[in-house]
Every structure is written in C-alpha cells, then in structure tokens.
Length: 336
Image (cartoon, rainbow, N blue to C red; front, side, top):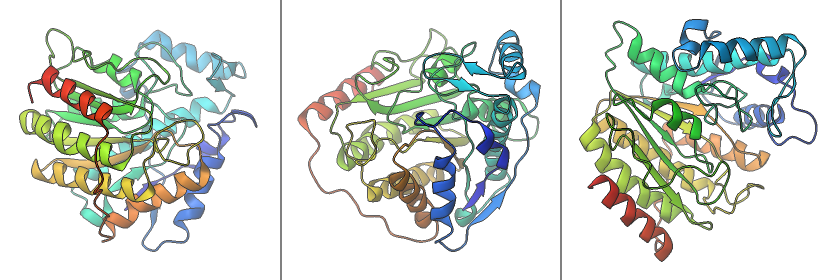
C-alpha cells in the first residue's frame, strides 16, 4: 500500500485527555515501520473550492477565523488550535490524494490509504462535531465526481467506524450519485443512522445504515458485507469505492462494545477489495477513528498485509439473533 501522511497533522493539538490525539498517527507509523513495502506520500493541502463543494462557505470561513484566533473548544468534543486549520486542509487533501492515486490505476499492492487527522465523518455541511472539522472522505468523493476526466459518475463511501458518520450522510442525503453505507454500533454517538434513513426523495436507497447491537464482531460484519453491501453495490455499480476506515469497533478499543478482531479487519479488507474489483471501481482508504493505540496500529497493519498478499481468516461463527434481525430489516428497507 501507499500511505498518505503529512507532519502538520501532528500539530492539531487536542490536549492530553482527549482520545483523538497525534499519538494515533505516531502509533500507526511505528507499527508500519515493522512491516515491509510501506511508502509515504505528503499529498497536498485541499483547496477552498474542494472544501466548499461539500461544506457551507460561511462555515468554512468560521473555522478559519476560529483557528486564526487561536482555536479553543468548538463544542464539548471538538477542539482546535491555530495549527488545526492547516491540519484540516492537509487531512482533506490526503483523502483527495488517496482518491487520485486510486483513480490513476494503482495496482493492488499500491492501494492508497490516507492517515491524516483530524478525522472527518462527523463533519456536516455547516457544522463541526465529533472531533471533525471537514469531511475528508466527502471532499474527496465530490472532487472526483466534479473533476473532468476522472471517469467517476458514482461513488460509494463505506464507513466501518463504530460510530455512524452523520456528517457524510448529511452531506449526501439528497444526492443520487454518492452511496453511503455504514455499519455502526447501535446507541452510540451521534444517535443517527437508523435503518429507515435511506436517502431523500430524489436519492432513495442511497443511504444504507446497519445499527448493529453491541457485542457484534467478525461474523456480524462479514454478514453485513455479504448480505447487504455486496448486493446493494450490484444495483448501484460504483466507479469509486472509498472506505471511511475507523478502527474503534475493535474488541480492544476503549470506547465501544464491539468485538471485531484484527483478523476481522483483514477479512473486511479482502471483501471490500473483491466488491470494488467486481465493479472495476477504484479503491481508497481514509482514516477515521480508533483509540486503542495498539489495536489501531495492528489493524491498519492488517489492512496493509492483506494487500501485501496475506490470506485473511474467514469468520466461521454464527451471527447473533439480534444482528440478524437488523440485517433483515435493512434488506427489507432496501429491497435486497
């Protein structure tokens, strides 16, 4: 894989007690140092036009002014310093770099993964929240659709972060050329992502939410991919596949009750690759959450190893009855 990384992302200082710290990126890089074949690229800063294609221009100006004034507490969870402005542009730019690399025809071993911060999937059209200022995956997807010559008419953003990406859903709810799919823990922040949230009147069945019960693990996520995402993509047929790759559903993450293993992320990676390949869709990964440093580092490393030839372990246990009920409800909501 190729990894996108920029030093300014370490300067976004959230304070010593905040879960989303620069140590997350340091842990990933330290873990990658033990693996072969890792390349890093600096990417570029996202330009204003790309940001404002998915965010209100007055909101963008407010974020810039907030950071220029030294930052502070935007809300109870979302913190900025002066350097956050450039870090946010870099994080969005790294996501754009990853998509550019994917669209340029990177082969399987060179699949791009942006490891910028702050993360993005909670950032709505005109609001920061949940550690996020700009919606990195959304910026990258919309930029690919808008740019001449990319060949992208339809994009999917698959969000496997344990939290629902309310921001991505908010931005694309009424757009029929971007499909948003999320497997997340039921009842967690931000409280969105119900099964019946399926898209606006002109974009029906382009939002697919599976609020899985706490305790769900490898088997439940495999069922989501096999029984929901794969058939939904048969109908949508994307040109671009972006993974909003949070790793806080890991069984050792401190802020969730999910039970995904490191090997489980390997299986999900392999299935995502297969689905993207079936549609000749370019594939890119964009970092979101993940707050247990060892679990985060090992899981990102597992994604890399799958693209480097590792055969993932196939989950063989049973899907819980509660999760099967959710999956059946999603099938019904999407006529799958």
